[in-house]
Length: 143
Image 1 (tube, one colour):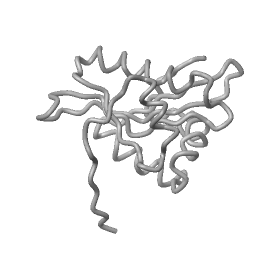
Image 2 (cartoon, helix red, strand yellow; image 1 turned 180 degrees about the vertical axis):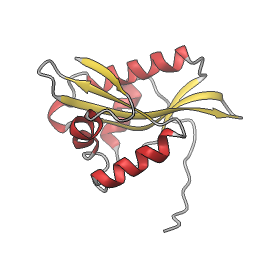
Image 3 (tube, rainbow, N blue to C red; image 1 turned 135 degrees about the vertical axis):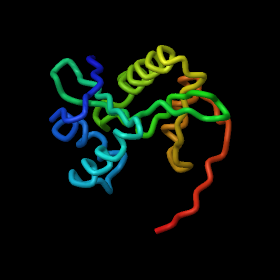
């Protein structure tokens, strides 16, 4: 497996990563993804792709470094998804390990993410990865 941090403007963002990301975020279109990417890059949004030995993208992670008063600096994972055909093959673990290396290099105090309450399979994975539920996430829809 090969893990690659994709730079802004890299054609693999839409050609390779987006099809995998759509498994988690089916509401995205290429146009909307590029719009979020353009705005998010100014906020530190980065994307990392996992490729199998055949060069097929099988995992995607969207993430950013965030300064907060509660944690000082953390790596926040916006998106973490493994393609359905590649689940339980170590892709998610490899992506999290790669992101943890980024977090440690940036002297973050934690790696955090939110996960929908319905995503019980993902929760089992996060627990296996030694992550803990440390807070509730509250939301008030505005649209």
